[in-house]
Length: 89
Image (cartoon, rainbow, N blue to C red; front, side, top):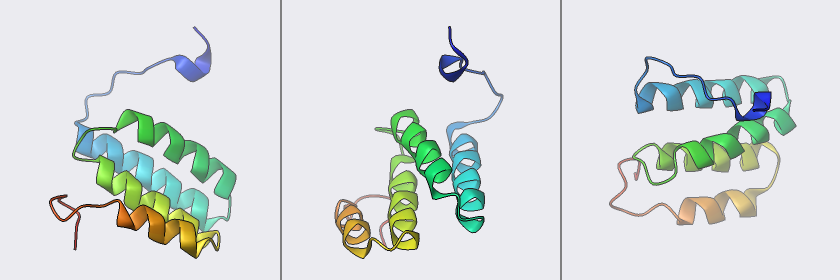
């Protein structure tokens, strides 16, 4: 198994794991390392698909697009969030 496919079992719940992913994305964004932030978000999308944390990942993707200057992409991502989602404002 290659290092990129190794899964580490952590004693954290789904919400805490999502928070770790999103905090890492935020740190990469603060240091303007958008490529690494995008890689982490790509992994987060697959990790949290069809879970309550999926919307938080979508919000982070939209935020990253805004930080990279792609307003249109950011707005399109936000349009995918439905009124029934827990992060809908």
